Length: 358
Image (tube, rainbow, N blue to C red; front, side, top):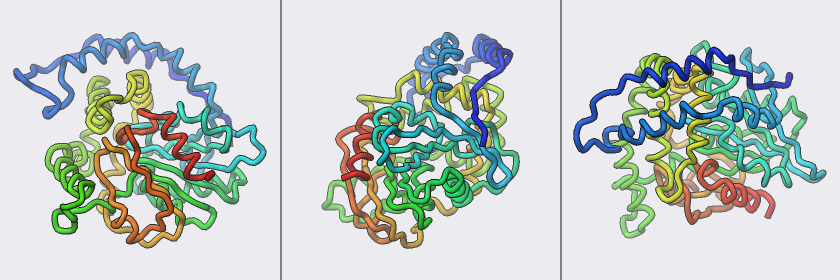
């Protein structure tokens, strides 16, 4: 287990600037909007901001967070490890999803370290220390790596939280006897269809509507990443604008329109994916694990808390979640969307404190 420091070569920073300066723009049809992808005026403004983004200042900022790397399952695993000054603090694993990185929790670290020792792993192939170079990467495999990491850190009992991909990973991690309780923002198997919904209940009607919209209006990225992840890899590794757009579309589409993901977080995330060349390795999880996502998982007796955000991509229904989870807390959040750690970090931190400490 070794300390890790971000140090992107200057030639990589210069290359990014050169590519941004030489962007070859397509012709947008008149009236093109978000249904076609990120509108070009929005993307051009973001590219200009990225060109002027002070990566070195951001790098110094991120390096203030204690970072480490260790090898598990023959693969380097990067993680943040922030210990609490509180002698009664409890260990807490935070796991991110796509298309973000471990630094999605950056603004939650300070409010949480009063009560928790934080372990925040980078899912292998998402950002640091770089792309995975073999096939076979699935949610259960990564969950085993995180469990091993917690053993190496001498945390015999701990808590876990995750969103998106990290919510599914947290659910698998929670099957480990060392995990005392979990908290997730999504349970993807807890949605309803027109056949299973009680359409007299507003939340269930909304669950059906959002599922329909996701499948027929927003599913393109899943189709690409689950069938041709290397096509995605070639495009996004060669074009920084493509990488930026790929992330911005998701951030815009699934976040609270009154809040959104801060531009600084967007540019940080895009920079990390770009410099580490992890567009393809993060996309491959959709191909190698996609067939089980959203299916009914085995029963879990781990105490499970759920936060449902009003602008999330889907709506989980408690009665459906209770089929195979021990639900102990179900919170309808007042604002926020799919990327709550980025959109409403203080609200998300307080929700975790209340779920795990009260």
